[in-house]
Amino acid sequence: MLEKQQRHIIDIFFVIALFCLFALSAIFLISIGADIYGKTVTNMENNFNTRTALAYITEKVRQSDKDGQISVGQLEDLPALVITEASTGSSYQTYLYAYEGHLKELMCKSDLILGPEAGQDILSVSDFTLAPVNDNLLKCTISLSSKESYVLYISIHTGGLMHHE
Image (cartoon, rainbow, N blue to C red; front, side, top):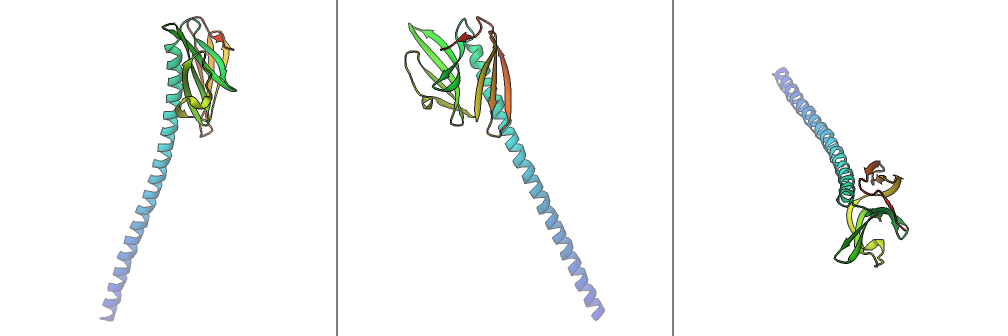
């Protein structure tokens, strides 16, 4: 009888140990899955920010690719893509630039002087630089907060880049 009771206790311990092993394995797998999910979400967010920023800049240039409207200039001391448009007798300028961790857009009359803080936040970026490669090619470099940099070359089809003072 004692041997039967001892065997029964061993069976119970075996079942409990098997259950604990299963529970630990499940927790371990859930932990790995959560880590992979977190990394995937971060990568997707960085990819979205990169694609959106590059597509936004490209679309702004394509929209305004008319004679003499696109130039590389500055808004205060910040490098900026400057798009000049004439509408109903007034001249407007749109500035795309990075300020305080954001890609910003500022549209104002050409004779107004506004600071970079007046612009609308577009996306989070850590740096945005522009460099004319030649009169018809613009190099944009965007750095994200994840310290990754992306380079975009945009071809100017009509009139080329103007030199903005």
